[in-house]
Image 1 (cartoon, rainbow, N blue to C red):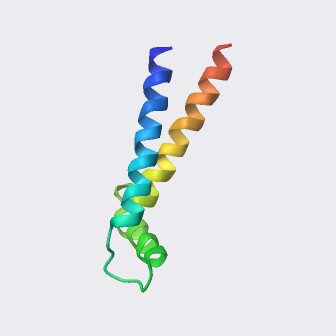
Image 2: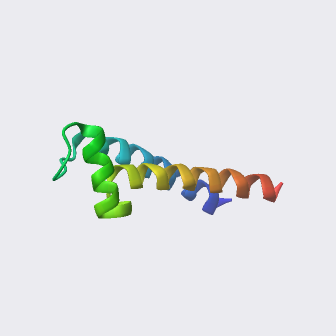
Length: 71
């Protein structure tokens, strides 16, 4: 049960951090923030804001699935 709570917290932290990074990071190419974020995802992968956001969502989903399977 403790690991599920840690997984939820880690997912929430990654999601919030990803949203922050998507709003503040600059990219090398792109004329608007959306294009810069997509380029950062392609170039940096999980280290980009979109990658962190998606990883956080996946952590939360995995936590919910594990919680349901334990019942």
